[in-house]
Length: 148
Image (cartoon, rainbow, N blue to C red; front, side, top):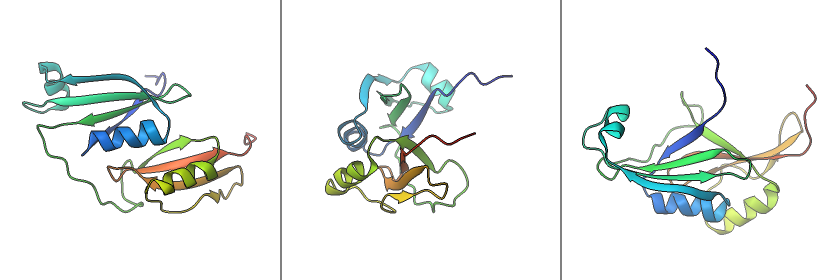
């Protein structure tokens, strides 16, 4: 078996409009697809019954896809997990200018865990913010390429 590549990240949203605003308007991703699905297919692959799902797919400048999903037929609770919790705990997004991004998001009321900080390897500046679904988003500005 060989993994051919990275496909996308999906985020289950409590409020898909707030999430769309965050990722599209504040972080600059582009909507490439939006649709609803309540077919037998979506119920089968999700292991759910009577599910109706709203999908919004956003593309990053580099081509990766972020998928926002909302299940109006099934209530969603916001997670309150510590950063050291087991499982997937964040997504990391590369930005051009972390200081500008930080200030822009801070002015819009986005919560941050920290301000931009030089990484221990000193090749990047990093900070974490919280999206509308309590998902941790690591923002990274690469200062120079690491030598392998």
